[in-house]
Length: 340
Ligand code: PLP
Ligand code: COI
Image (cartoon, rainbow, N blue to C red; front, side):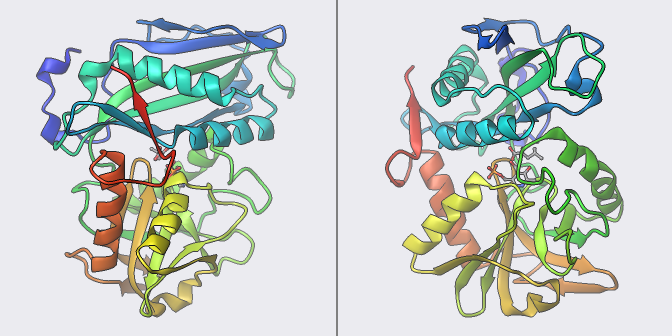
């Protein structure tokens, strides 16, 4: 597809094929140097562990077009580190931080004309992944692996962007208490498909999952972490071994502190939502999406408003997005420039 036909202002979160993607193969104990290819189709063994035993992981990060025309990546070292942890959890060979960032840079440069213009609200979403491939049938780590990075231009993940959405507490778990919830692996998302679909069917943007051990505390949503702003102005986000350690969430913990809020990773009990003046979902795709309300069984709890964004959420959004697009100064090392 040519980027000339894209309406940058009406992008959603959909796959658009771009020109080139990076692919690297692991065989006999090492990764090759990787190349860019036009081919967006993989040809892999029918015995690949990625197909049968879910031996795979992925990442998500974005490239942003700045006002001066330059291009920013946001904390790619953190995505690299998380992918290394995911690979370790699923017995896959790690990608070094250097290789990960280099692959991302190559893909962005090779598809530069797909980066949505500054001011459109869009960005170029990068999807790195590692999969187990090669002939195999037993439940073992694969004999070979593929690391690839592709990109696609995106707009808001939730319809309407910075407009409040409603969530629904799910009776399903997305991850087990000591399972793979903290790793960015496909199995967690496979488990979330049915609950997510049921929530969408009932007009909710996504599910809120409760902690799988006691079902009393908020964990996260299907594709984003959760945060709440208490009535006494504290920023609280769940601490749990079975949620994804969100890079956006850790960034917000720092930014909220800079804005003078007390911050805490702690318990958010589902029957204590009255403590919160505002709530939101956060993530690379979700950015910050205000949560209007949460349906929990028969009860619907409204936070700030179902129509408006609360002031603390708005200030955090402006700061985060300002840093990502280069309009505001972030903490040292958060923004990595891509040379033109
Ligand atoms: N939680 C889940 C389940 C996710 O899929 C994501 C998206 O990556 C997040 C949280 C947010 O993580 P991050 O801020 O690193 O994108
Ligand atoms: C991301 O935000 O990068 C994610 O991976 C979320 C996914 C559900 C699209």
